[in-house]
Image (cartoon, rainbow, N blue to C red; front, side):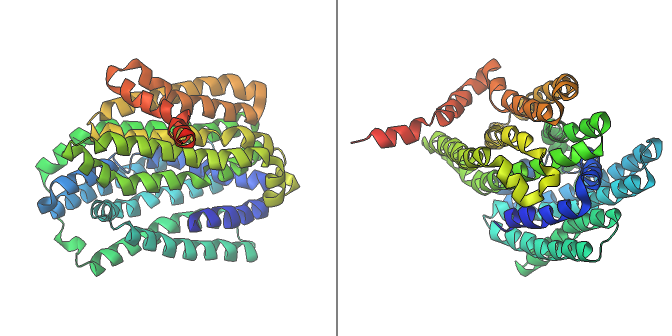
Length: 412
């Protein structure tokens, strides 16, 4: 809820201060670097939680190996971004922002501590670190608005979020009686983690492509101001995405434990998770669809009125994002990571192809329609084509058709 509040209050203040054009440039820089930062996770999130659950005696070895791998990936990412911005034709200001934002990859390596807390079902400590970061960075952004700072300093503020979260993770890890100094690197563990995670790395990159490529294409095709309108709508639409992610991360250990028991509770918990994801998405999408225009005018002001049409369409992508996040947990629990890559690759291809068709014809609303279609293809329709995923497709459809709530209502 604090992240939601920060996104809607501080994010809106930043957008109002910068105006559509500068806000569009900032989001363009963030979208561009996000394509590279997708590599920094190395697809280890869910795999590490599973490995830490199954091998608690190897905790320091697993965490130390994953941390080293992430740090190496972060250094490579920084070098690639540097080469990319030097070869590009962006302004010096935009290039500096890209390099600053890319540096967050170094501090995101400490996310291995988050996986440990998730495996121990101690997500509250992760929350504490994020709350501290939100307070500090939100205060910094407001101060930057007050002093009317240059655009590049807002990129620094967004990067600082990763720095503070990393420091908080280390602090609470030590409070819990552990220390990163005990972490050990093991080559065999590194090979095993990378062997399992490479499909998820590619999937993560592809997910980022079809969630961020629209802003890059809009800026190049229509200009930074149009991207500013689109980014304002997406700011509202995507603000709540952390909720299904947080719920799924918190419930993942319970789902793995249910699978190991083989008593039927695994399928029951999965269905309840899909039902919950759809219910949350509808609670968000329906009211925002009805109130999109007054909401945009209230939050961002008349300068961003063009964002209302985008929000009306884009908000429904959250329905399939929620199913996609929960479906990804099922793929990991079933060790079907390769399908995760194929699924997201399908969505990315659809997104890019349709963007080339829809953006020139329908502008930023066309980009929103493209996002909705690609999310539907990746999160739901893809499951029809593989025998192993047809069962989970039926579970998702059951959730979308609200079968469980309807049955409860019809019960005498």
